[in-house]
Structures are given as C-alpha cells and as structure tokens.
Amino acid sequence: MMETLRYIVFVNGLLAVISVAYYALLRRETFFNANRLALWLGVAGSLLLPLLNLPDWRPQPIRTAMQQTARAIVPKLITGPTDSPSGVTITFPNKRTFEAFQARQKRVVWSWQTHLLALYVAVVLFLLIRFGSQLLSLKKLIHQSVYDPYDDFILVRNETVTSPFSFFHWVVLNPNQHTSDELDQILRHERVHVRDRHSVDMLFAEMICIIFWFNPAVYLFRNLLHQTLEFSADRAVLAEGVEAKAYQYNLLKVSLSAGQSAITNHFSKTQLKLRIAMINQPNSSKVAWLNYPVFFIAVLTVASAFARSKPVIYFPNPVVEPMAGLKVSVKKFVKPVLKTKRIEPAKLKNVYNDKSAPHVQDVVYEERPEASYSVAVDYLPITADSTDDKKMEAMILEGQRKYGHLGIGPRRFDKEEIKRLSTPGSYLKINPDGSLSVDETASYARVFINNEPVAPQAVRSLTINQLYALAVIYGHKPEGQEKVGTRYILFYADKGN
Image 1 (cartoon, rainbow, N blue to C red):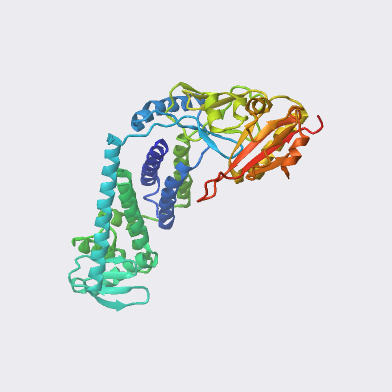
Image 2 (image 1 turned 90 degrees about the horizontal axis):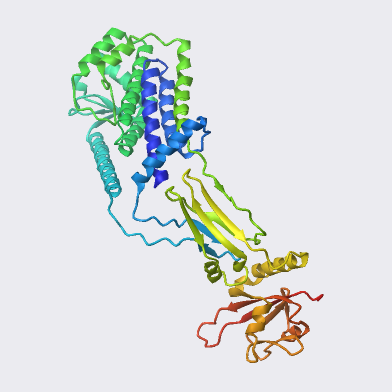
C-alpha cells in the first residue's frame, strides 16, 4: 500500500513538473516535432522513473528531514485494521518455511481509504464509458456519410458536421459550408494530421486524462499537446505556399462553428489567438535548443529529489557457528515504530522436527525508527567443533536432499534419545553388548548407513558409541490399505570408533 501510494504521488508530481516546465520553456518554440517528442518522453519518464532506484544526491540533513516527514505522514495515510508484523520467514534445509510472526486474520473494514479508492474506480469507469461512447458515435457518423478516397486520406462528406476534423485516415467535413479556397486549405491542414498520425497522440492523451483524472496537470498536458499538433499542421500548410493572411482569415471564419470533440483533430482547434500568434512567430534560433536539456534536467532533478533510499537489512549480533542451509529473510516491512519481538526456540522445534532446530538459541526481530529493520539470529554451537562432526552434519544434509522426497520428515534422534526410547518392543534396539539391531520382521522398514542402502542385518555391525545420529522418514501410507507406509531408517555413524 505504501509503495502504491508513493508511486501515484510520484507519477502525478512528475506530470505536473513536465507540464509546467514545458509551458515555461518550450511552448513558444517552433521545433514542433521536438516539442511533441519532449512531451511524450516526459510522460514515459513520469511512469518509469518512480520504479527505479535513482541516486540520492540530497545532503544528509535534507534526506533525514524528508524521511521524518514521510514517517509522520505515510502511517496516517495507510493505517489499517492490523498491526501484526508477519515479516520474517525462516527457511530450513529441507525447504520447509516457518513464519516468525503469525498475522492475525484481517477483518474487512471500509475505511476512508477504501471509499476513496472506490470513488477513483467509479470515476475512471464513467470516463471510460463516455470515451467509448464518443468513439462509437464517431464510427456511426463516418459510416452514415459519403466517402471520397484520396491518396493520403479518405474524405468523408456529411451535411450534419459543423466543424471539419480528422480522425486517423478519415477527414470529415460538410463541403456545403466552405468555399473552394477554404476546402483546399482545410484538406491541406487535415492531411498533415493524417500523415503524422496525430490521432494516436490524442487518444493516448485522453487515456492519461482518464487514468489521472484527479490531477489538473494532465489537462494542461493535453491542451499543450493539442496546441503543438495544431501549430505543426499550420506551419506545414504555410510551408506549401499558402498565403498567411488568407489562411488566418479562414481560421477565423471556421472557428465560429461548434461541436468539437476532444479526440479528433479540428481545423479550428485550440485557441485561435495562440494559433495566429504562432503563425506569425519567426522560427526559433539555434540557441533555443538549449531549452530542451534544461527541460529534461529539471524533470530528472525533481525525480532524484524524491528518490527512495534503499532499505538496509543488517545483522547487529554476531552469528556463532550458523547451521548450514538455515536462512532468515524479511518478507515485507511494517509501519516503522520501535518494537522488538522474539521467537521461542520451542516454536522452531515444533516446526522442524529434528535436532537442527534446537541449535537456534534466539531469533530477534527489531523495527527501528529510521525505517531500517534488523533480524538477529544467535546459534548454539553444534555438538562439537571437530572436522569429523562437520563431515557427519554434511552427510546428514546430503541424506535429506537425497531421500527427503520419500515421505514425511526426516525426524532426527541423537544418542541420548535413542537410549531413552529404545525398549524391548521397539523396532530399534540396543543389545546388551552395545550393538544395534532393527526388527527384521518389519518388512516395511528400509535401512541406510551413511546414506547407502543396506540389509537390516548390517546394522548389527554398529554400536551405540559409534552412532552419531539417526534420521527416520515416514513414508506415505498406500491408498486403500490399512498398513502404514514404508519407514526409512538412516543411520549415521563413525565406523572408525
């Protein structure tokens, strides 16, 4: 929610900067194709720049002040019905994950933010319906008219049209309202719109106004774009040798008509005074090209000023002998207030049902006011630091990867647990001489020693003192059968002892 809000504010802010900067720097320049390109590059930048991690050039005091302002404003805007930070996920070597904090089930509450979102969606739907209705009306008008094909466009003659306009390759007008001289100039003007595909610009501008209807800057952008397209067409007509005074007179005459649509290119579109002023405007000098880099630098400067600092995740406490394969990751950030949570080691034991989890001594999740979050994991050292023990632990992990898919588990036991659980009736026994044995009558048991499959009788060669650990994988019970699934017993022993 915070990221979405930030993106919306950032995009609309950049659209405002682009519109104002263009109005101040470029609207009077006669490089009309460059002006058109600058406007659309500005829009593309407005949509893409908020998604990038721009370099933060702000001095530290300014950066701190802006972060404090954001922390004071944003939590008030995005407060919700829950404050449970389900942000930390622990992944164990067998790919099972554990949520450090279980989020409480959210209750659906219609807050003012939800009403605001509903209003936004409703207005967008209304504007889309109106936009579709305009397109359908235009299509109906064209189909009910008389066609005259030309090389560059299709002339559509309709006596109900009060103002000539073009839409893609159609030029629509009422020939009875215009003299032959006026028709020639109108067709020259609209042919430029058709040739340069100005209708595409107008459709995209209309869609931007629909999506960001609440931002006054998008209407200024649309108006500036329409002016640029009309200025470009006017200048192209004059370049073909049309007399400027007669052309201005015809503009004045046609501008008295009404019924213009926002999605079409009209011969008398935009403010007449501005068009006449641009017709008489001398060509811009080469020095005016310097305004374009100034325009883009202004946009990039504003975008960098609101760049987001990358969140820092750090481990303030030293990690002692981390268990291989155990990962701690932050899945999402919660509201930045000082809070500390701890995970009981017993919870880890319940999730990961072998002897790896108890090696975790403590897990601490801290939320810090400066909007950076720390996850500290302290480990108890593994049973011994010897090279042999590390080899055995690596062998156990290899067995989990190799045979873990066979069923549920593995459940891990150490020597002391085996001594405690071994009884005359159990499938694993400790014989009086210290040797081990499994119940050979249990046909559903499969035995492995150091990850290699062996016959059950081979276990008698091992003693309890040689045993390092035991892992049991409980196989799935076959469907429709009463008996339990296959039990896979993995012995890990140092045969040299």
